[in-house]
Length: 396
Image (tube, rainbow, N blue to C red; front, side, top):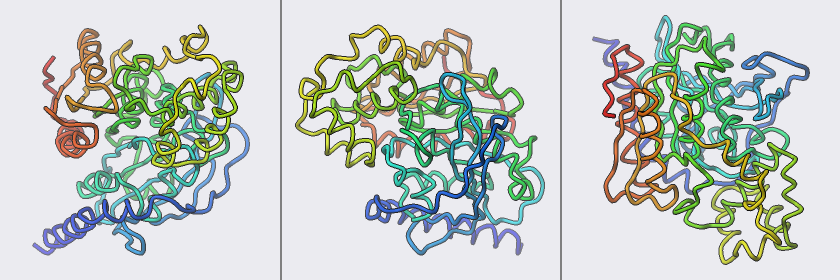
């Protein structure tokens, strides 16, 4: 009985924190993050730790959670197969649980390109809009690892929406959590069932991780992939990003960082170069504002999308060419103004045609934000069934 009351009390503390986090996050979306720590030099296997520092997960400033947490730097692989170091955060609930616990490798939606926007910076300040989803996972007794993505929180430009780099980083974050001695003592082991989850950019990254898992990280016990609002084909521009050129420039900068042969600077006007400098250091709302009132004609002397090398590299980000290595849950709002509904619908069809087990959930008349709110809980419930070993049915 006492154990049940303690568990209920802990859940209530988490629930109370989740209620207020969105207000606090909206009030604290900028500022300096925790210290960068030491990035380990030299080579390492994908998922090997390159640095660790103690961390505090907050949902509001000065309001820590009943968790243990660490900021990590870990080895990964970039889009062209070269070694890279990525940062992230490992969080475990202080629940007295013994034995192996499930692990969620969580991919956040678009936060921007400046290092101060990285999840490992904002989670410590209680300024992360997706903290309620993380809290829900922790309430269930799961551990959570959140990648910062390549170049976000580490040197260089963030390789925004570069699928293979993102997917590798999501999978290597799970490996790194399993190799962290402090987390091992909290039940994160190589035997932990692994769930992959994300929405928007995180939907893209988590879906890519799902497609790559069997090939790139076959030792991970991936049980399910839950992805929402997925920009499954960034060459299909219809309805994506609401036409904002600030977000489009983030894609251009990210791909130029991943593939230097694209030579983004050679396509830009003076106004375009000025916007690139702003976007490189800005968080998402700042970048949206920076792009308002500008057209592609203002920013580009010639359109990079017309170049074969850009077509090829952007085309490589398309999801749906291989089946995910675990059952998948996809969800999308039918009136999504940021990531067109048809992109999610097509990914579902592609995966189904490849023989994958796919559960498809639509949210009628829901835009990008409302679908994230409505769909996150059911997606996590579906993932819980997979982590507990219940078979997926799918509705292909």
